[in-house]
Length: 211
Length: 179
Image 1 (tube, each protein chain N blue to C red):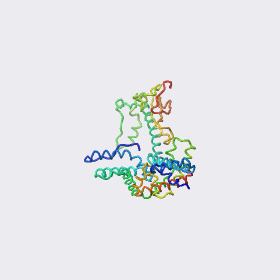
Image 2: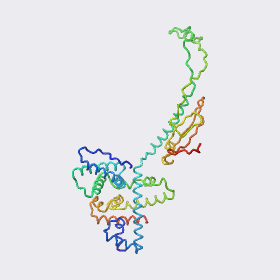
Image 3: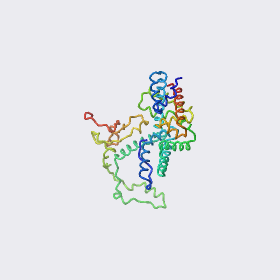
Image 4: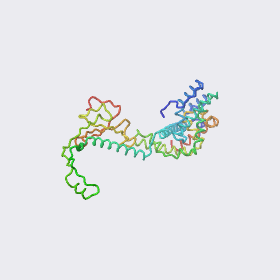
């Protein structure tokens, strides 16, 4: 074994005194074995450095347990469905209540003690409900999208819901900065129309040529 | 680990120069110290707690006129001792799953590169397990950028012993990792 082999790591770490460091440097120019060992020590040092970095990244990265992620995905999906249902219900026609003032006042009521008489009286035509047309109560139109998107110009007023990528995909499955938007409108009969889910890159400037 | 702000409140009665020095050292050593503690086997939360305690101790040390020679070694020594007190066993770190450390480094690499890196890390981890405590600690402190003199101050051994220990540990790792 070469006499200088024990000093190679210290030389690599620049821990040798000046004169010794010069001797090792000169030796490395002529000794292939020491040069090969030095190269392997350097590789191990770099590998250890990378390993430490990965360890720290793994430790500092906030990882949620699987069940928490599953619950959050489910909750996000339920929230989207619930929001859509609320919007649908807001669009449903509302029947006005009957006008009690127009009901005949001669609705006879049998004495409370005589149920037979009460039953007979109830079977007779009593209050006649006036036929009233079903009127649609106009509710306020759904306002602007939940998250205004200056880059999106819908052809007609619609509803836009922002969905984070983490709600639909496992963490890391989608590149950073990718989110999704669901665009749809609600027809007068309450059905969802023109549902479209598309990805959107945050902080990406729209090119003028894009539709 | 991107927050460089000083989280602890400095007492109003402390010397401004002392506070400034402690703050400077905090900004310089916080991340390397966290890395050392996590690689020793502490969780991120434990490591953060230790770092907080260490720099509070540093502030008191400086305010009381303590020696400022080899202050980096002093900081690491206090952190090292606190880590040993907190840990049940150093084996805790190396019982953690390897995939967690690998996954965080492989997001943007090709599958072949990821596989090779994973295999290298597996061999390295196995080799580290076989080292003695002193050898492992010397290597981790060396990876944290400490000089041999500072490592000796942390572990309470001479500089020449540090050099021999580091050289022996690196050789062992090189043999086990087929490098």
